[in-house]
Image 1: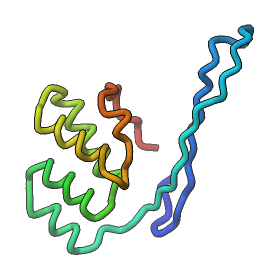
Image 2: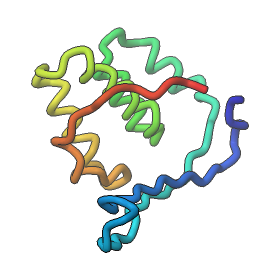
Image 3: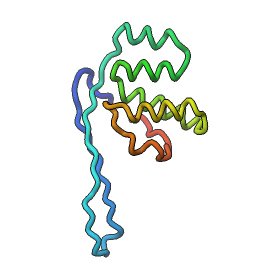
Image 4: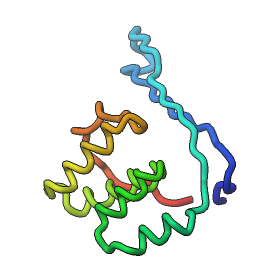
Length: 118
């Protein structure tokens, strides 16, 4: 079921890092949370995306307009296809360090794959 346009959704992800249920190690689960909102592309953004076949320019267009999910997803797919491409690595580093994305800590972590669309 697709998200409704112009509606914000809060998401969260918890990771239980304890060694086992029988261990006396009591770690607090790590958590991530955020908000996502589905938007319709404006005609201007759609024209910018259609004006260039260069995938890195398309990623930059998404980022310029604050469409972070698509920017990260498209660039992650490019990195999965060509993990050693220096242009993709540099763009990944720049995107993750963007003040609105703020994911610089995971720059060097491997991209394991893309989750299926539901």
